[in-house]
Image 1 (tube, helix red, strand yellow):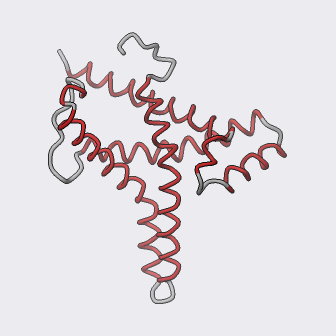
Image 2 (cartoon, one colour):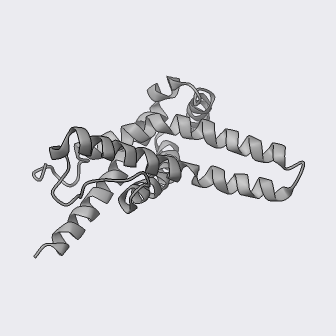
Length: 179
């Protein structure tokens, strides 16, 4: 893995991007349900609307952090040699700082990859093709049909490069810490 070229995303970056793509559908569904709950509770108090809006925004961070933590607890118990030398054993029920970072960074990747994908599609496609492509993407979002659209393909590539950037920065920090 050390010999992997830095300009091309490493396998862990592709895996993270693909996982986030599949998980994004669930995130969208649950965030929409939280927003709908906020609209329903708005009849009683506008504070509920604000609280549910904030919860819908931070919900992806919380979910990714919890799933990341559970996944690493599973890996530490079932495959103890699968972790790198720089990581420690994951213990406890509460997500670690590393899991919270992954949750926060995944939210950033969701937002940036979506914005950059829109910009890339704006350069590549004509205006009519962009709207048709984004319309199809939006219409099939709650099903798994969205996985086979051109915008999703571009989105996965952009997300993989964002995860590659994180991987390079993390490697530089680890190299700086070791004498």
